[in-house]
Length: 257
Image (cartoon, rainbow, N blue to C red; front, top):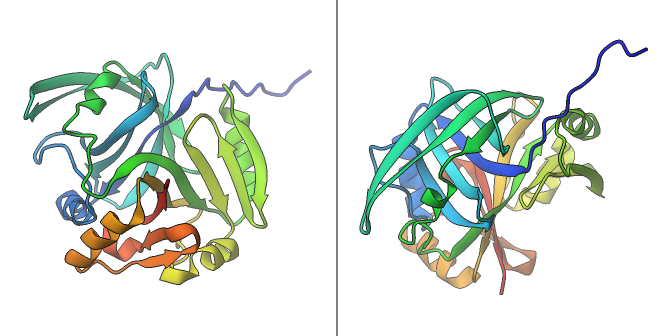
């Protein structure tokens, strides 16, 4: 007889990542200096939109007002019980309206659940074209003192097609859909991204960075140089930008050509 039963949540993918900030306007400005297009200022959600792999699961990064700085991932479900939130944007092509339902979440890596009522709102043409050539948000990086346990705890909760595997010494992959979650040990994280000397988070597990697919490295580098944004180029022409430059998020740009 079981003492308790863990009910798995049928997550489909990482829907989006939220940068919760005490100064969201400043963070948005820094992201624009990296060549990203954001939704209009003064509206919610303020986000960077990309073309999704699945038409009913959007792919975006959100900047939100918060009394404390932290990051969380939103996991996409077909059905969620929770708070309905509506939004409206004015674009060059007219008004866009939509809504989503935000449900409960958990840990150890901060997450919550969402149901998208109008996923097509996040793929309006003027929003998914970025001067830096960004194509998609493809990976979330997190740091944990015990990556295997953190991954196992998530696997116990997330249902669907969640898979866990070792990919590097000190790094565990958790995949629920197209967007990957890589959980690093502090030592492995500092070694992998030593080119920009990342800081180990004070509280762990914590989300520390993302990977973004881009067409080519040169247009991005030109934008960064024009805006005096420091960066490092590593193997495969990957471009790394430090958290100090972006408002708290290490960004790894990965050329596809």
